[in-house]
Image 1 (cartoon, one colour):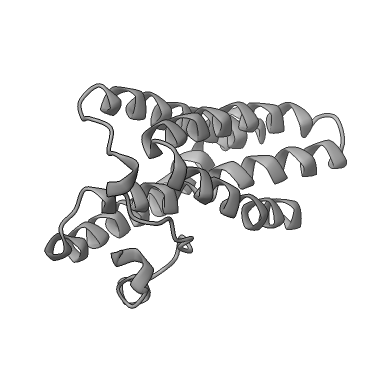
Image 2 (cartoon, rainbow, N blue to C red):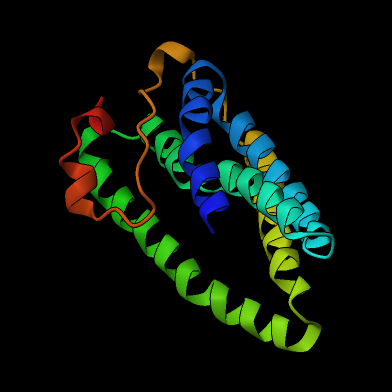
Length: 171
């Protein structure tokens, strides 16, 4: 667990900086497919050794945990000030739905298929997110760099009060 937490804490800043410089959609797509591949690697690493699993968990979490903040930054790039609260509420609702439903589904899969299904489920979920991101890139133009806001790392469990009181999210 500490390897995953350290990975998430360590890699969020470089990913955030990259998202300020490049098309966020491409970064989300690459991160989603990378997280899927790293989840598959973790599934196999768990059968090798604890050190291999810790390394895989570090990189998996380092790529996957900042995804919420990257998606919020991308969403906020296209919103007007009067739309931020409603969009934030919708994103939190979607996150909550996944936070409740994901473990339930994964638990059932693990009961049927064994502990390897944990990483397989995560790989499938991030693979689906990557495919959705590719699809969305065909539906909307790229946002010029000068029109983008600055990335702000937001904890996944941040409340609307925290996000609305963070002035960097509004710029």
